[in-house]
Each structure stands twice: as C-alpha cells, then as structure tokens.
Length: 330
Image (cartoon, rainbow, N blue to C red; front, side):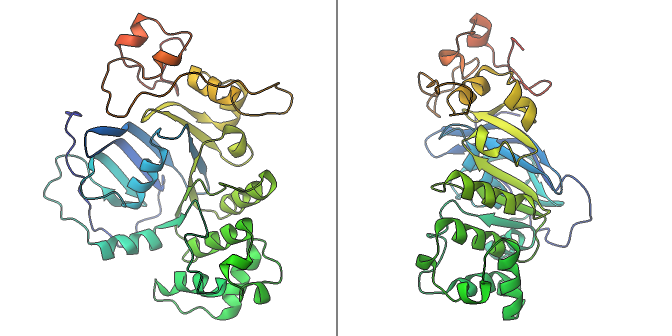
C-alpha cells in the first residue's frame, strides 16, 4: 500500500443485524490525513470485544479523537482515509481497492451509529438542547430508532446510572444538572438501544476525580464494547481493561492497563505516566519538547527528538509494533 496518498474511505451500507461474534470493533491499518497533508493517524490496528473497555491515551493532537470520529463515520468528505473499520460485522470503512462498493448514505450511517454505536461526547451541555428537559433528550434517543418509550422506562434508565429521584430530576433542564449528572444522562441516551459499541471521547473533561470515576464506571457496566478516548493513564487505571498509547498518529504501546501502569515499556508511555500526579510517586515530571507537526514525514521514531534513549537507528528507521511495543530497545 502506498501510504503517501490515501484515497477517500469507502463507506459501505451493510446495516442488517450482524452475527454475534468478536471482536465488536476491528480497526485495521487505519490512516487518516486532513487537507494540506496533515497526518492525523498513521497505521493503527485495534480490536475491542464485548464487555471490554479499551482506552486510547496520549497528548493532544496524537490522533485519538480522529480514530473515534473514523469509527463513527464522521470524518469530512475532504479527509483522506485508508484501512478498514468494522463494527459488529458492518463496514464503516473498507480496505483500499474495494472501489466497487457503494457509499452509505448519511441516513444509513445515522442508523448504524444508533443501532451499532452509541456516542458519549466530551461536553454534555453542548450535546443537549437547553430548551428540552432531560427526559426528552433520553426519549429522543429511543425515538430515533422508532421506539416509543414510556416515561417509567426513561426514569428506570436514569436510575440505573445513579440518578436519584429520577421522575423529578428528569423534568429539569440541562442547566439545572451538574456536569457529572448530565454526562450520566448522555450515557443513558447513548445506551438506549443497547448498541454493541460505545464510543466515549474524553467524557470526564472538567469533572472532579470522584465524579469522573463514577462516569467511567457507568460506561464499564454497560456490557458493551467501549472505546474510551482519554489523556490520562491514571484516570483509566481502575476501569479500562487495555490501553493503547498513541503518539503522533501511531500506537507505540498496547497491552493490559495494569501492566502498562506498573511497568511501561515504551519511553513515551513512561514519560506520560511520570507527568501524571500519582500518590507516592513524587512530583510530576513534565515532558520536554513538542510532538512533531502532523505534516512532517521524517523517517524514524516520531518520539526520537524527545527521547533520552534515542540512537541513530531510532532517528532513521520507524519501529513497528511488536509484542505490544514499538521500540528498538524493548
């Protein structure tokens, strides 16, 4: 495959119910470029199975949100893509070369997002209409799939995610709820049709640690496969089963969360963890330097300019992900 000029992704309308199989989400060799030649994602592979939470973590601009938008089929028409994404057997993005497959309509993609994928946004307030009460927001998630829930069903869905006195609280408006409560309501809405996959893009931004933990617990208990986008290793420690550490559009380390937290193997994973405040680990250590600009196509490891262990091999040859780590020295 020539990765210098990825073609437009091919969206495929295969929206019948998929057979029960794993993984729920499969991403293969995903590449994404934005207009102007900025590489956001450079060859990511990822599988997520039912009842499993996998977190993609990394600094701002590492490509993690672009991966989430790719899974949702929400990249713009001018964005270049290649690779393959399937959700419960439905193709969101087809391999290069499958040019004969028709594009899915936006209506079909909306059906797939609801029936197969639930989405939890970063800011629950911006995701809600301030003129509608919370109950109506959750009801609309059902109605989008031609379901007419009774009010007690809406209240039950809110109570299951920890909203006390749901019949009264649900009649309030978004501005009357705290950020943590409203985020839990968006989880109830995203899970209204019990989709096999939930995509959560920084769902705990601006929440304190206790509330953030509750929100992640709500996601984790859904039973769905969960793709969690985050910037914090410590935040996902108690909830994610696996972590994919992303740097400059590539996964540089992937594995069980506990293993990466206890003994990170890639220098970037170690630096990211060292920069995170943790009890008993002293003061956080800032990571010097900046990630490369997405338009840069220099050879070698993208982290080499910030890595104390970098050698000439690191600067001239790109390490591949082997045994869960992309580093010549591990």
